[in-house]
Every structure is written in structure tokens, then in C-alpha cells.
Image (cartoon, rainbow, N blue to C red; front, side, top):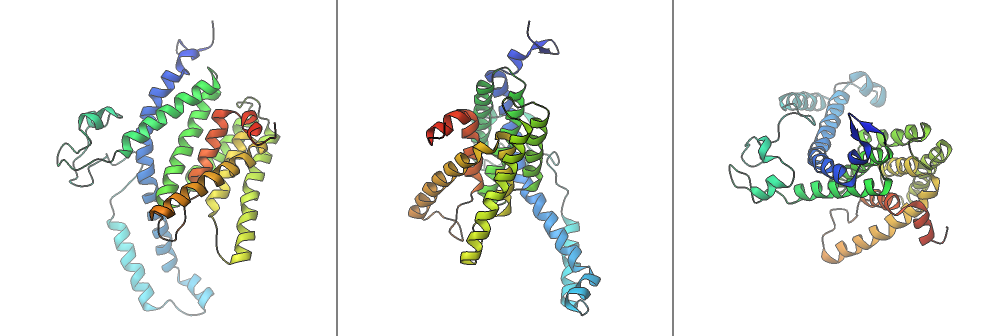
Length: 314
């Protein structure tokens, strides 16, 4: 008989059906992460601004003068504004309708089902609820099921589901805000290195993982600086370096070029379509993170050898 957890065989716990159901629940939580984490980060950044405005010694060192009264006044106003904000985290407060403030009951928060029963509207004020919420839940469920099918009934399936959830959250946050939070990219990077060191990722050694992380970071870092020196502009953010480093840690150095190629081709195609339809955001650019994450997941699901065969490297 195979291994089991709490008496339940791993073949069942790690099956596509079981992990797909778990994916629905995780997808519901990802909706919260994607919405709240950027707000939490922006609050932190404004707190940093407030702290800097109040640091008179730093101002004296940099500008060789005392902090001007208008800056002191701005710091005081910012401090009051930050203090008046209600507490926010990933677990609290409970979810509410943004239109009327109705607290969403547990039975109104069942993945996909509640949205269908409510017909995509708040039960109190009937304001529309974005279809993106059930789509994220369904996408996470399908992703978990696909990863379970790819890995088989092996503990690595659970690891890949965790990595897949983080990648999906990063893709959505970057698409919405053009920010790839360190709070997600860095744990993903270190998680891949630790998993490789402990032998939890079949076929991936620690040296391959380390070189993957290094090559992933330095490749985009080099492109960034070449582009900036040539044009005086920034072509991408530092979060893209960290995300590709994390993908290299999970997939090895051989996966870096296929990921970048797929991300570049698909990103360029999407950018051209958005330009033609006039849907490019201010600044006329498309974030690269969602396509890096998609390229990484494509390598996982198709298999590195298969992807290398597509580009003639097999």
C-alpha cells in the first residue's frame, strides 16, 4: 500500500480532483491577496515617506539646512491621515461590498457557486460583482489539477501548487499595478532553492537551482542596464529580475531562455493588440511579469525537455 496522510492515501490527496477542489478555495484567497496586498504595500510606502519627512537629521545631512516648515506641515498631515486609516491585512477585516459596505457572509463567499447563485450581484445593494472573482477561482482550480496531473501522486505536486498560486497572484498584481511585491517574489525564490537543496523537486539539483536563480536575475539585470544606458529610459522593473530568478530556482538554468522567449513573444503580441485597440495604459507599456509567470508555468506543464525541443535544444 502506498504512503498516506491521516489514513488517506496520497494517491487521493494529491489527485487532480482533490487538488482542483483545494485550488477553488485557494483561488478565493488569491482574490483577497491580489486586492489587498498592493494596498498594504502602498500604505507602507506612505509610512516610509512620513518617516523620512520627520527625519530632520537626514534632511540636514542631505540638504545642509533645516527641514522647511511646509514639509514639516505635510509630514504632520500625512501622519494624521495614516493614523486614521482602518487596519487591513490578508485575513482581517472581513470582506465587504465596496459599494454599500455589506459584510459578505460565509455562504456568499463559496467559490464560484455563490457568484452564480447571486447572479454576480451584491445581495444587499445589487451592485455588480466582477466576473474576475470566479474566473480566478476556476483558473486556480484548473492550474492545481493540471499540476497534479503533471507531477503525479508525488509530494512535489503540492509544492508546485504553492508555487503556481504565488505565480498567479504575482501575474494578476503586476497586471493591475505594474508591481511585483518582494513579499511574494523573494519567498518564491528561496522556496525553490530550499526545495532543490532538500531534493524535493525530482530532476533538479541544488547547483542547477542556484545557477538558474543567478542566470535569471543577471540576464534581465543586464538587459535593463544596456537599455537604460542606450536610451536613458527604464525598460522594466527590478521585480522582473527577482521573478525570473525565482523561476530559475524552481526550474533550473536551462529553463531561463525558453521562459524569456515565450514571455517576449506573447507579451509583444498582446502589446500590439492592445495598441491597436487603444487599451494600453498610461505610459504605453505592458507589464512583463504576467508573461514571465505564464512562461514558467508553460515550462512546468509541458515539461522542460519538450519546451527545449520546440526551440531545437533537445
